[in-house]
Image (cartoon, rainbow, N blue to C red; front, side):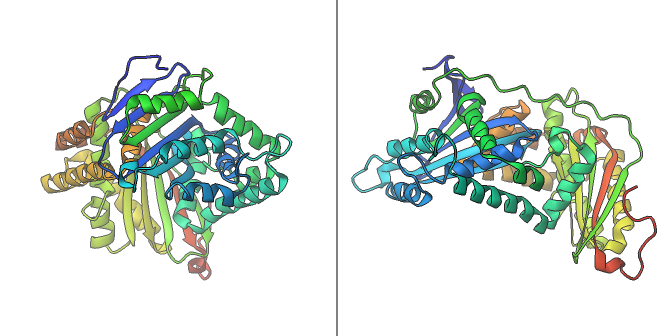
Length: 445
């Protein structure tokens, strides 16, 4: 049952059910599959570990299919339909995503009905997981908690991921944006069965939910799924945390940590003033980051890597939800100060003078190509809409591309002034390189 008249959200049809579930549908016959995604969005917190564990517990079995093998066989019997989950960060929020993908029935011999049974199985996984006396089986819980802890620990082996998280730890501390999306090893170790049940209960009964569907759907068909899954009224999603203007600049914080790495990771963070940002500036910030460090043509890559041969890679990225500009370089530890100086020089150059026509045009082309490439997959379509919803700027693909194409050199110069001074410099250095000549005072400053 729909509470509001159907409308549009970018390229999607949109409606809200009386239960408070937002439904987004992109009817298309472009793909040979149907995709349904359920997303729960909640502010990142110290409960991240418990919420991230729940999908892995649900997949272990249901009341009717009590083992993971039983669940897999049930999906395989539906022409290889698949169910998967993920937990990821979006601005200051943690997103829990459940995905169901089935083959379009019109492509199968005899056109058997497989979508409805697949949806029923997905509902089972969410609402009727295999429980013993009201709790996840002890052995299953212990194993998945161990797996979750190992997943967190594995991030340490991806040195760039680890370095970025350490940068966030230092820059944002206990602010939701800085919290690890999977939680910490200590938080995972402390989880009890009751924590998992509480997080699962929130998921199925309390947290705001969105349903996205891409494929040969009618809006009413997906609304019916929403009604079947989520009948009780649910609260509205919490408003996104207001992003405060950057505080007055102080001395940047430097943190150097050492590890057994052959290639040191140098990362910096700068806050970006997002106050009173209009749509033109919103897209200009994206292009700015592309000109600075968004590809082989970018200023950081051409200067630091190609001209001066001081980096294995050099790039920049911008989080327009929180307002943070990141730069990252893979370097020799002895070149840290030189690379830092060159990075500052390129950022200043964009503030003092507009980009050249050729680098602006190449960046715009890359951005537009990337935006259109997202629509080559059903998942990319959903992610494009989700990004617009999070930013409060929902637009069609064509509108996004037109806006990117309209960004001018003057726009880049204007938004460059929104980039604050460096707040944090983090370097993960190879310990072996400093064994002979250790610098006094190395570490945090």
